[in-house]
Image 1: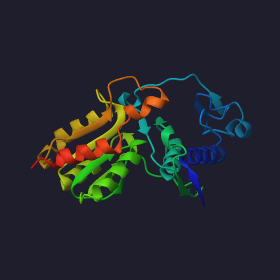
Image 2 (image 1 turned 90 degrees about the horizontal axis):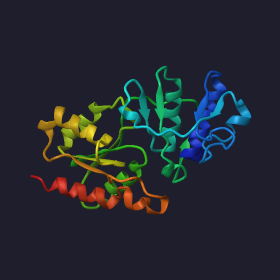
Image 3 (image 1 turned 45 degrees about the vertical axis):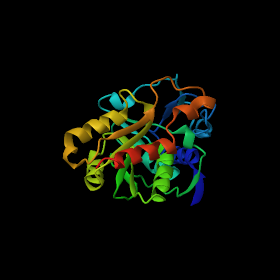
Image 4 (image 1 turned 180 degrees about the vertical axis):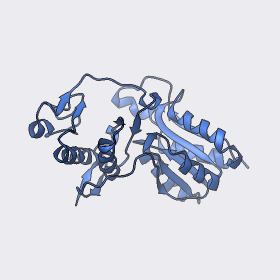
Length: 252
């Protein structure tokens, strides 16, 4: 076992599965000759050949809105490795999104033992009784930091990483909100028609009577994502999450 980054975990899982199963192929922008823009697929072309590591044009879509596919978005090296193995082995189409902001942000112990993590379930990263923070992907980092800051104020925040956006594990969210009575949803996506809105709608339909305050969404702005040096002004930060929790706690 070695401590590795999230991007290294993705590369490790791809090598493991492509060596284990000759039917596995990798398709994406620059995944072949360039080894991926962020080096996530480095070595695949040399090891497995051009018929199994294929470059494709860039295409972005709102994948969670497409019926019939799973959408997975890991937030740590350990979950990236285990969820990617599960995504590759699943018989149904799975879109695996990679949070590039987390590629080399931190390291985590990951054993290359081929053990997959379950799809379609959320991960409770921190237990709490005062408010439920629901997030996924890159925003897990800021959300956990907000939970740490809130703990210093005596607020116990429960943090749920949904990991699989579709199908969504609403059971875990409803159980948590049933305990805390309050929910803040954090996403880096734009506000209008975001996946946070889908979670909020489900809470309104199935968890309204357990809520002690309105659900609050912390999102990116309704603009095109700016260039890298302006990105920090677009992404939700820890201060915005903490302020939202204070707001929901103010309801009595």
